[in-house]
Amino acid sequence: MAVSRTGAAEGLGELVLRWIGGTSPWIGVLVFTGVAAALTQVLSASVTAVVWGPIALRAAPILGIPPHWMGLAVALATSAAFLTPMAHPANALVMGAGGYRPKDFLKAGLPLWILSIGAITASTVVFGPWLPH
Image (cartoon, rainbow, N blue to C red):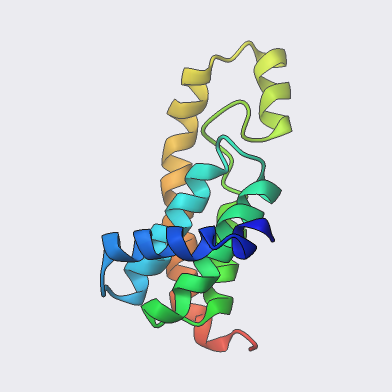
């Protein structure tokens, strides 16, 4: 709410839009999905959705993407918490019990993280037309 009320959503959205320009919907969804997936490594999934969601939703029409597509992509991307021990409580539990180091999470999680971003982007753009409005 505060992100929307203060105008931060519009400001950050415009900054990202200037960076990606008038690209295809694929690139727009990919960038916003990637940022959400990156933020969820250091923030909780709910905080990432609350902070990044309004920004993505405001940018979607400018990119020519229906907002509900972008909302879905960001919501799914917040579950890609594979790269750090603090990304998800289960990661911290596994780290302690298994004796893993942060480097181990990065090694094992990076391929899955990249695959997740690609799958979320592709499924959003391909199956988006069948989503209810």
